[in-house]
Image (cartoon, rainbow, N blue to C red; front, side, top):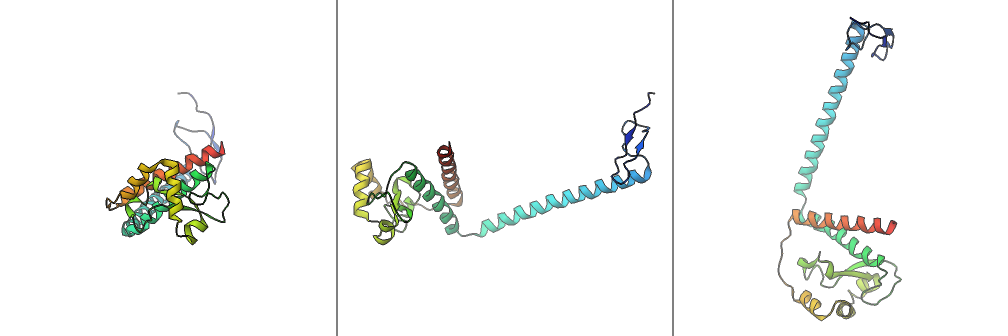
Length: 196
């Protein structure tokens, strides 16, 4: 049998050179083997504890999400949809849909049909456009000018269809998550496009 080359002991405290007897031997003796075994056991125990802790945190997050009211998910989704609608029109260089201004103290995502009056249309992007803070807040949406701009931009028929859409809808958490993830993906793509 050929003589195996010298190697350093795998025990971090020892690190002495030794002549191995077997090809798989990584330590110089019993004491070092015991120390390395204890270290490996400690690491395996820590890894198992970390994994168990991660599982517990994931289960806790899932339980926490399950007890959140539907309004929480609606608000999260509304924020994401408003962000993409507002950022898209800003990227296109559009101004306020109602008054046409391109300078505003703050930009809002204004709904033509309000979320209170038509909750089923709250995530419909055709219903949400860029508005200045004056029109959206101080003039309660400036709806007459908003409608005139919608008709000018899209035509009378789509606006009438939007105004006459009164189909009630009950949102589910799964639907809201899908809408939110789509809006967030569109927003990331828009930001990437702007950066390029």
